[in-house]
Image (cartoon, rainbow, N blue to C red):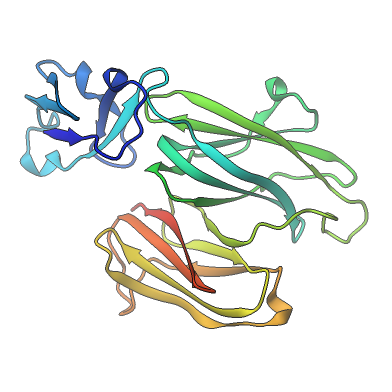
Length: 285
């Protein structure tokens, strides 16, 4: 098995390794830790040989996912371009965008009423799936379902988790909960474009959100890993009254023929004003 590194930004190629797993819920394992596996460097490639199948011994069980993972400073870190919070229908919503990710398995969210991460609490039940290794912008959205109190300020942190288990934290950002019953926070900057989907991974359905700063025609489609169009979710004009509002689209995991699609990775692709934005989604069964 050969892994070509052409086009990847590698600080230390000799600190790079490869992880594998046989499904989205199993643990990652380092190929170099598997007995009998041999690792060699050939030009701009890493070559692994003698890779065994999974313990069942069945060839059908050998369908695997492989990702590069680095030792210290092996890959570029996650590049975070924005991290904001807003109150939508009395629920805190976190929005963040990365410009690039390398070996990012996913995210954790921490919250506190004090600006102290050491005493904060993790509020996501399961890790929020990351983009892995990507040089494209990725948008994320997370709803804080825990109770919030009026006139209280809450601090949030992001924690990125690499495939090799390394972590990096971003923040904090603060969200002031207003008093009274207006249910909205004042003067919170909006994030425009495709805001990601929640939950992710999902089963059986997920909500895809976007927000526009001007009216116009919007088209949102679902594609599979092969680039085949699976479903059209939205193709309409966004009116003046819908500008600056978060618009939610629900995908039930069915294709355009009403058939439930198989587990795997899918992409929500939004076309708007001569721009294209993409979000990765994982359907688990």
